[in-house]
Image (cartoon, rainbow, N blue to C red; front, side, top):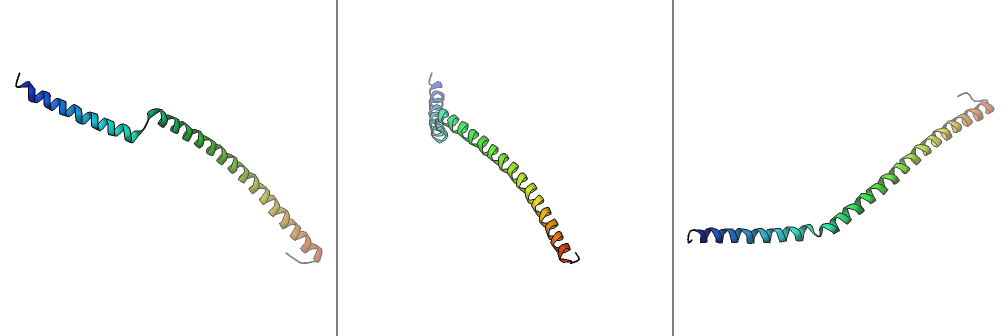
Length: 89
């Protein structure tokens, strides 16, 4: 039995180190339920931000179309004014 004592002591020491390491890891990681809730909230926030971005990009495209139309209309108006004044373009 004396041959088993050192092995049992090493096993006990290894298990103690494992418990300490696990406790430290759990402290760093935090509460799993809290982490899941935080991840869920982050995913919802990401979804909301993605939707807002999509809406903003669609609005930007609409505004660009309107800007192009306004630019074309302004160019036509300038040409008409020049023609009315008898200026060549």
